[in-house]
Image (tube, rainbow, N blue to C red; front, side, top):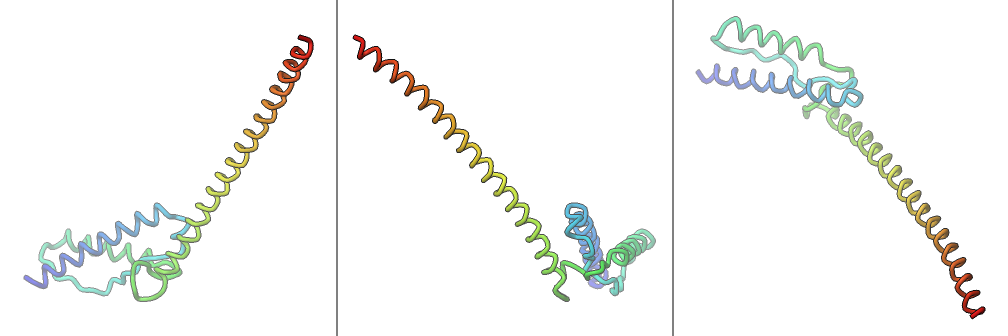
Length: 140
């Protein structure tokens, strides 16, 4: 009973891992390119449910085999691949943040300069009004 329970738990973990990996690969296609799964299908399962479980195990094993990746497996402590992926993500993410900040800075600069120009025009108008008022005062 304990062996079967452990086998079920392991199968659930592997299925969850496959779903998580697929979701991450879908969400971060460019970054995940070349990175693969970190699980290796070397475990043996002892389950009494028969064909459905066997099919699931076969599907998981096939998915793991097809998604090994050229750089190695991620989400494992076996090697440095997970850290390489994290570095790729950080570089891309930070580059995106830097680009957004750069664009925001340019917009702020342009907005500030537009305000300076507006105030210069306002000062011109006020000076001409002042000139007219001074002339009217001098005539009076």
